[in-house]
Amino acid sequence: MRYNKLLLLVPLALMASCENNAESYISSADSVIMSEDLTAINSPSRKIIHTADIRCRVNNVYKAVDTLEKMVNTLGGLVADSRMENDIDATQSVRYKTDSQKHVRSYTTTAHLTLRVPAIYLDTVIRQVPMLASFIDNRTRQRHDVTLQYLSNAMKNEAAGVAPPVVADKKKGGIRDNPRQTHINAAKADTVTDRRIANLQILDDVNYATLQVELYQPEMVDVQVVADVNHAAVVPFGTRLQIAAYDGWQFSKGLLIVFVTAWPVWLLALVVWYIIIILRRKKLLFFASK
Image (tube, rainbow, N blue to C red; front, side, top):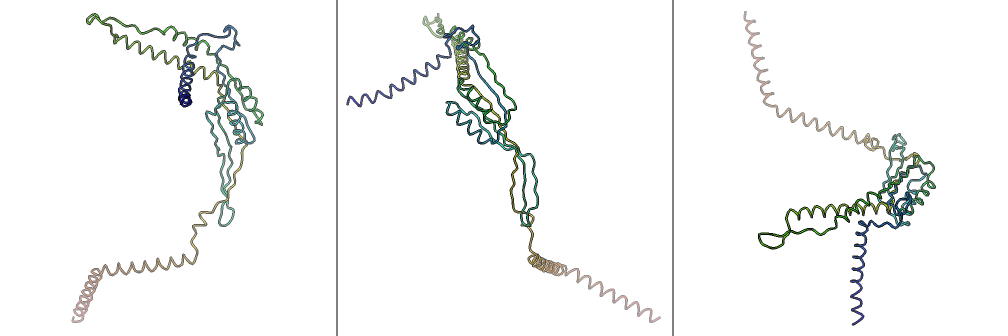
């Protein structure tokens, strides 16, 4: 029974530990106490954000990307973004056989990486990239000192850490919150929270450096043999004869139908022709009697 009670205390202890960790993490945003002298430009207490950009050519983009991603994960970092694409430079299609074509296209494979690594390992990653490259186009490394920005937010939050004032309600003789003052206090609380989140973001950027890497490889050629659509669409000669005979028969039936449909026209033409013949005979008899 006593053992079961001890088991119940374990989750409570874990929850308390998590709460303490969260409180410690949040309180770090308002700390104005520095362990080292800030007057030295290389003081460890300074808040330095490290960033770097590298563009280089490699023999195989996929292998280089795989190597970098595995190394970053091993160092406790994060692959924030990883994109790989093929840029088509030229395309051409040529006749290969009677029933197929050869598609030839040249392409360049590129990769774009955004790596977040612990700041202490940034040099390790930067030195690894040239070992994978055959040519370095450019390399940029920057250090942004945000110590004063961090201290400004922390000191403002420390100065704002005052309990919201209350005013006496003269009519009722009691104490109540002034609505206008409540609105002002809420706005101040939002400002304090924003500065605290900004400082947490600064601490995150200080602890984890950001490395932008662009990799590309020499132009490659992709050759693919595919079926010739035009050849596959050609109808055999015997089939074409059958189709032509069938179409001719259908055309003949159509003409017959048109002929039968127009029987009143033919009847009228026959009557007109008959009248013309009778008139011509009467005309000939008239001239013969003279």
